[in-house]
Length: 264
Image (cartoon, rainbow, N blue to C red; front, side, top):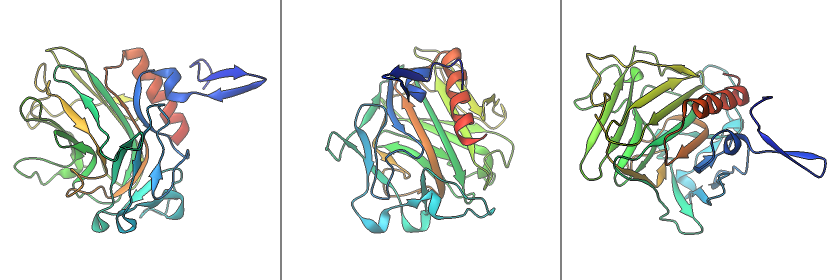
């Protein structure tokens, strides 16, 4: 990863700053293979937005402990089972009800490396006022493997449904998803998979055009819709959230860094 400025020399050593160097201002960074256990995954952004699960029956297992349905072994993250209601709560500075908030008309970016294990509705992150999910449509759409949704509920509810070809979000191979929204009333979305821009199907997609969804939201749960439904089924290998939009250069840097780390 030469040329991205990913390290700071100090005393003869180089400390890897990764995404912090590529696109500063991270609010949450669940860094692959860094301070991750079944009960707690520590935040590498510096904001102490750790995720925890105090109930052992709702904890995911370390992804290095299992092999996915394709026979591939993945490490450095967590493997969630939807049938076991696995999920985690944001724990900011020791406060279990921690929250990352994005106001209406504000930009944001979320980047996540996942490996799904089924076509079930899977929630990456959510809060009482929003969610990021695979396969959540209203009314239900049979091609869940080609749908990604973002819901913002502040000051009112609007859901963006990004419809792509069936199988776009298939399994079990891992892939990198990046969703960026520019600030302001235009609310332009950029949606990317493994560093390439995806264009939603205009016939089926909703609220993804200019100004289609500028609503605010918060995040306080990882792996479930508010901790009670639509549990993630598969592995979350890395997750990063910014409460601002990223520039084209920063987006390219984020994609390059994560693709290199995960061999995508």
